[in-house]
Length: 226
Image (cartoon, rainbow, N blue to C red; front, side, top):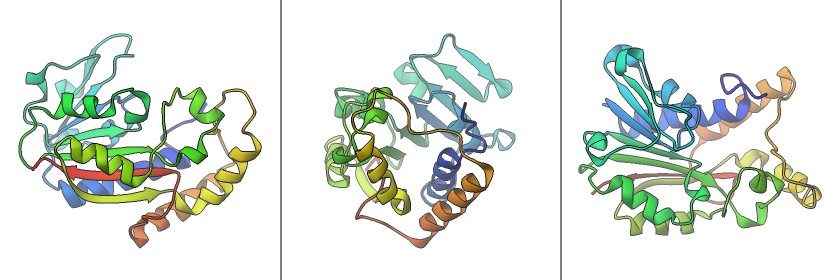
């Protein structure tokens, strides 16, 4: 079992998202996480003690619930009125799961106010397709240009785009190539503590160095409602 509070992949993605929100939405008050799963990212990104709130939406929740005195809600579906006043929409590893990625974006952003920040991550490069994608029920992987096209068709203005996890891309590509015929299984597994620590330090350093528009395991796009 992977613990997102310590695992290098989740901690690196959390590191990136925190930097993005500080830069593009420093006055965050309300965050909506679409396809939020456990709600780990939204819970870590929001400071409930300062009046911020988060709405986590995922149709797979067994039930709806409320935490942090109502500041954190977990719902299966949200009515348009519940999305009003949102500062940031997160679509973290969501679009690759739906047949109509443009439709999903348009559905949630139809009533978004001018200046609303939209943060999207997806897996990169169809050539990296593997049993990992099958296990996670992905429908596709993207290139930056393809994701940007979808986002712009949804009426958003791109403010940042880049690939993530570039430093481990060659090793991951080789592993997936050699495992291409195996049955569906996740590549994310627990690793020894020292390996986990080295990966976190190396990948966080990579993200501090600047934009990467060449290659990586994932893509990050930040956009604004014009």
